[in-house]
Structures are given as structure tokens and as C-alpha cells.
Image 1 (cartoon, helix red, strand yellow):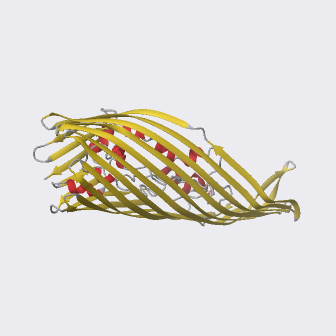
Image 2 (cartoon, rainbow, N blue to C red; image 1 turned 180 degrees about the vertical axis):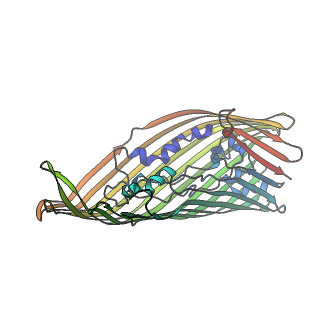
Image 3 (cartoon, rainbow, N blue to C red; image 1 turned 90 degrees about the vertical axis):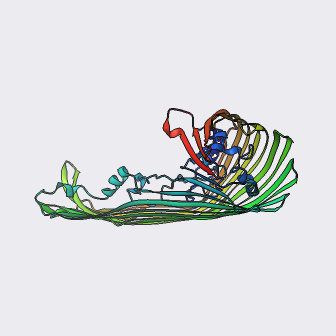
Length: 593
């Protein structure tokens, strides 16, 4: 996975929120977790991956040239059918939305007691396969079709947390029943998660004249994720009963559309210039609903005066949505210096704009009533405690993030004949990332407890805060890489592909945040008397973080081979480092007619 190490700067970029906010609190907003959102298919064969997936255009390849400009499809003269089975290396991760899923961190966020220790189960969202078909319908009309599919299903909640969660709200008393006692019990369980997605693209090439080609790109991507947990258990016993009525639902939807037009001009046989412009639009939303209406009752079988009753009604609903736009422009040239030597160069600019918003609503009403023996003054006293708790949470947030990527490369390709090719070049890239968000939050909670039958008294508390939280972050990346690759036919259709590169990157991150408590009020009562009355207004907390600049240098090596049979079947093999570990090998198959 050498070229993955080449993208180490990008992974730092993707996890920027976690690193750059080392001293700045994170947002509560969760963007919809849609894999490969706002990414082109950027279809690559295993053969091109051996060189390194982000060196598209620096060496001749009938598939990866289409990433630079779809008008290159007019150069094909045969039918091509290609498939490989889901190498995630092909995904272009540079322009992925950079605000990754964040946990809700507010201490007053209302959730059922089991929710904080519960983990969602991770299932596979890598594509199952990558398929391509290039068809010359006539001398002047060519078509390319590309497709990949995502599908998986499994448990919604992880098994261990699901087991803990299923009994979290019950008392222990019903476990202690006489084993011969009558048992009435009903259980209903549903713990299922499904993800499915489809990414498709079609390219149409038109040869207008012997010197002018056009290429049209149309793409569509859909993603759906559904998670459902309904765990209800009732138990009735002679002296106790319980009911766990818990639900958790998650829905994530994503849609994406891409269109672009490319022009390829050949002023003469030795020089080609091309331009491509396209735009990608997308939208996504995430909705979560949690409900817990559990209750329990128990009494001492020898003395019914001792009892315990509890009831809870906890709700939690959250949602977020995102609207995105990503224009792209590419300008490239190719100049044949000699019959066996040519120069390629391209400049591209991409800008991704994401507008997102989120809303959290929560509610909690719970009460309990119990009697017990209280130890005081060296003796036990029969005591009753009744309590009520309430909570409310409301959060609205809105923000935007922008990432700009500018890249330029130049390469020399030496190909004395069809049996071998040598290329080398330089690749420069600059990234700028800006993120800002506003959150408006209201928290309110309180409790009332009454003691009777012994040492009567009451206690009461109330808390309220209204606050605004703003975050602004900026990040810059500069990358320079120098790749060298060799394709050489060695024996009877067997060809080796080897490559190496050195990558230098410089990164800089900084962020600021302001937290304004417009109102923060806390009150406490004891036996009807107000004991605490703290009021704060317009309290400001300010955070500033400027990370040290980071410079990295990496060297990567690539290896693979191709077998081309005279029947037109090509077989590609790529290894990711350890030759003796099977899961580092990737295979691709192609039929040429």
C-alpha cells in the first residue's frame, strides 16, 4: 500500500478536526456519514494502481486518462471489459468532507442511561467490485460505462453493548424469584443494520473532426443506511414485574450527481491540448431517534410495605443535513518530442463547498417511589423517598466548510516500442481548508425529591443555560512528489510494473472558538428554602490553537505484473508490500476484443 503512505498528509487532513482541536472543544454537529460523498468515481485499473492511483495522466492509460478529460475515450479502437473486486485504494479521498462524525459531548444532553455505553456496529462500506466497459459504437461515437456497488448488513448495535443495554433499566429483584414460581414473560428483539449504495458513470465521446474531439461525463451516486433496534421485554412475577421498552433508529441518505464536458484539440500530430469543466452536486441527511419507556416494580414477599417503583420516559431525536457543490476545471497538454518520447502536463482546480445544519431535541421525564430501612443513630428507620426528574435539551447549528485543491504535474514518457515504457515527473499540490460553524443551545434540567415516614424533608434543584458556540478553522497543505515508473514485457505475455516515488509535504493548522453563555442560572432548595441562586450573564470563553507546522518525507515502492494472453484476456496483479500476505494482493481482469 505504498501510495497510501504517499497520502499520509491527506489522512492528517481528514482527521484535522481531532488534531487541530487539541485545545479547542469540538462541535456537537454530526454530518451524515456517507462514504465516498462528493467524490468522482475516478476509475482506475489495477495496472494503474501499481504506479500509484494519484498519478493519473502522468503515463498513458486508456482508463485513467478519462479522469483528466473524458474526450480521451475517442482514442479507443477496441471493446474493453474490465472487473476487479473492491480494492479501496481506488477511492479518491482528497476531497472527502473533512468534518468527520463527532460524538455528542455536552454534559446536559439527554439520553437513556444505556445509550452512553452503547456502540454501533461497523459494517463494510467498501465497494464489492469495480466494473468498466469501453465500447466504440462507430468511428465517431464511443461510450464508456462504469459501476461499483456497496452492500452489507449485520447487527445494528455491537453484541456486547447490546447485551448490556438489554437489561440496563431492570432491577435485580426479579432474578431472585423462586424457580418454581409462575413465570409470564414476553421478548421481542430486532437488531438489524443495512447499507446499500450504487455509483455509476457514463462517458460519451464524439469525434467532430480529425482534429477535434468532445467528451461528456454523467455520474450518479446513491447511498442508504438503515439501522433499527427494537428491544422490548416484559416479565411478570408474583412480587415484581419489569418492562424494557427501548428503540433506536438511524437513517442516512445521500445523493450525488456529476456532469462535465471535455474538449480535445489536435492542431497537428505532435501536439494535443485539452480542457475539461465539470460540476458535482450532492445532498445528504442523517436522522436518529431513541426512545426508552421502561418501568419496574418490586415488593418484599414477606412485607409488602417495602417496595420499589420506577418509570422513565426518555426521548432523543437528532438530525443533520448537508448540501454540497464541487466545480472542477482541468487544462492539459501533450507534446510529442520524438517518436519515442513525449511530454505531458496538466493543471487542475477543484473547490468543494459544503453547507450543513443540525438539530437536536431531547426530553426526559422520570419518577420513582421506594421504601427502605435507613440507618441512623445506631438503628434502622423505615423511610420513603419519592423523586421526579425532568430535562430538556435543544440545539440548532449551521455551518460551512470549503476545501480548495490546486494541482499541477509534468512528466516525460519514454516508449521505444510497445514492450516497455518508462516515465518520470514532478507533481505539486496545494490544499486550503476552511471550516466555521455556529451552534445555539438551550439546556434545562431539574429534580424534586421528598423524604417521608422518617426525617421528612424536600430537596429541589433547577439548572438553565443558553449559549452560543462558534468555531473557525483553517488548514493548508503543500505537497511535492517525484514518481518514476517502468512497464516492461519480460516473457511470453508477462510484463512487470515497478515504481518508486518520494513525497514531501508541509502542513499548517490553526483554529479559534468562542463560547458565550448568554444566561446561566442554577438554583437549589432545601425544605422549601432557597439555598443557592447563581446567575451568570454574557460570560465569554475564548479558545485559540495554532498547531506547529509539520513536514513529512516518505519514500514508496510499487510492484505488480500483467499477463496478456493472445486471446485478448489481460490479468493484473498488484501487491501491497508483504508478498506472503494474501490480503495485500489485488487482482483485475480485462477482455479486449
